[in-house]
Length: 111
Length: 112
Image 1 (tube, rainbow over the protein chains, first blue to last red):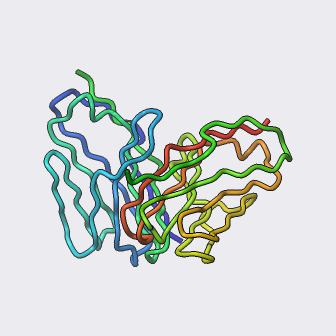
Image 2: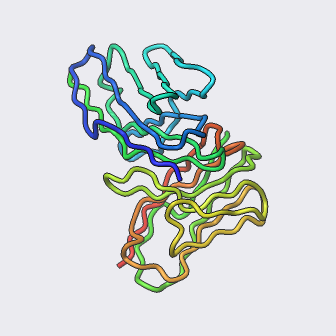
């Protein structure tokens, strides 16, 4: 089955700096790679996703890059703000039937 | 309002006492799934369902049962709960397994 590893497990940045979270996956057949943000005590919510037919996708301050050859994908947050503080999860699909999640990254943005 | 509703939100119970966590969605989604969330382990899929009467095991199905008799409902059943099932549980739904998933608010289970 799919195995997704996520790094780092914690990340502390100064407000205004950029943050990068990286994930690797094992199943070369995976085609869908979402990122979820989970604020304290809340449900995970999708912030961006990418499919294997593109290498990069941007939405305002958030971008995701995908390298299918190397089987890794990354989340980039620019101009971080305190409200970006949360736990972020990457995931990869397994033959379109289920999602396997990474272990999560706790991002702390210091004012 | 589009939503996934889980009940109960919190439950403290004892080992061996059967319990059911309900999940309902109003988005006409075909795909539904259950996850458990434990510190440092992220979200692990327990079971998923691709449609009515179609269910399959996720990564951690031991000790759990599910059923999908109607499209909107996907209950999670713990026939004989044990302390290692103490966790935060999320139900999610989507149009398919590789589409954005909408999560419920979570159910915090404590098995004593």
